[in-house]
Amino acid sequence: MTTPPTSDPIVRTEHLGRVVKDKVLVEDVTFEVRTGEVLAVVGPSGSGKSSLLRLLNRLDEPTSGTVYVEGTDYRQVAPRELRRKLGLVNQRPYLFPGTVDENLQFGPRQRGESLSPESIEQLLARVGLKDYASRNVANLSGGEAQRVSVARTLANSPLVLLLDEPTSALDEASKLEVESAIQNVVHDHGLTCILVTHDTAQAARLAERALLLESGHVVRIGSVSEVLHA
Amino acid sequence: MLKLFFSNQLYLGLAQALVAALAAMVVVVLARKRGIHLERDTLIAMVRGIVQIVAVGSILLLLLRGPRWTSGLLLAGMITAAGATSARRAKGMPDAFRVSAWSIALGAGSVIALMTWLGVIDTAITSLVPVGSMLIANAMNTNGLALNRFRSDVLAHVGEIETALALGAEAKTSVSPYVQASIESSLIPAIDSIRSLGIVWIPGLMAGMLLSGARPVYAAIYQFVVLAMIFAASGLTSLVSTLLIRDRIFTPAQQLSLQPGR
Image 1 (cartoon, rainbow over the protein chains, first blue to last red):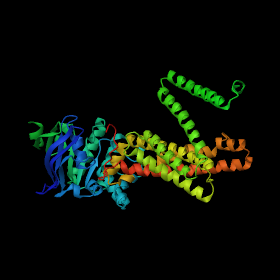
Image 2: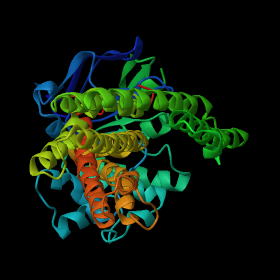
Image 3: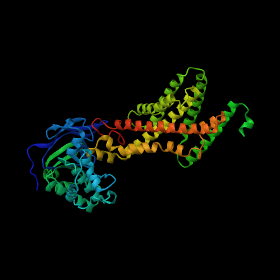
Image 4: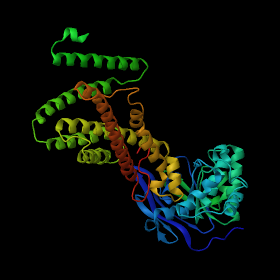
């Protein structure tokens, strides 16, 4: 079931930019994402897609502009709370040594919470990895590891899922598994999502709207068909 | 053999230094043949080392006749120089000199002060300065090892650290495995020194005490005392320096500022 977008934007950027040593990574990026919406950020390699996602998660500091999350300037929100709300999944999964269960517990434990075995199973079922909780992450395939990474971010109950090229480091079969897990998480559970991808076909499959970045600037934003086929 | 040619102790010392330096240079040449270039660093380090130690020897000669508080000045100067030396091992780390100097001052300084107060180290300049300098020098090495290891671990695990941050971890939690590994690895030489004491090596201080007529058992026990103090000073230094540098590699918004190429 897809939640229809509501009128209030959950994330809104305003003239967002980051310049490092005179190099423009992102400049004057303004857009908004509404609850339940999937926005694909597309563009060639080096266009600033990942830099934009790092700014949204505040792993990097904007040098201009800001981001509003549920109407609040994100600099007013404690970084740890902000990062829980805007959950990031990286291109590489970077799982912590140990079991799948321990990886999923990582986020909640930072707040002194713990997930029940049932919650862990539910999260794993959402990414197609039922009964994987006790497995050691060292024995997972690339696709399985990336799906654990998605489940680990979901364990924090984020408002928005930020996906940074989640399938670009995977082979074709693993890519389809991860994409199907994302479809399930995003569309069936109505989670708001910002997906960075260089794969326009993937953007068309997963997103309703797209934003085209080139040299750190927004070139077009609109429906996927408007942006990708203009 | 050298004693056959030199009756004057000063000339004998210079000849011994030259021969020892030649042995070191042979290693440098061997390393060069394998494509490892140590020439510049080794040469500069050796020239600096001999000049510094002779200078300190001369200053000690003067201080021996001076008031006892001058040893405090000398040790403070040594801590500053140690801070500058080991900060060079932490290139690219923010505030490396201040972190190193404070850590050595706290680590070695507090052990020297406490042990002098308790009477473990004699307050005479001839005892306080050499023993204190041993603690400072070892704290300096440990500090350099800890910062170097921490820097390379962080740079090699940026992805893991930022993943932990992105999952809502505190900055200190995200680097805690690397803090721990840095402290542990920096203390390996100090632990190995205690472990192999008497079996693999008889340290210089004990040899010196034996030569100056101390009873062998007391000289042996005191050597253990010195190594235990070295461990305490090094451990405290490494603990303080990694914790101080840990807080400096993050911005107030808990962003990792130590990044490759930045």
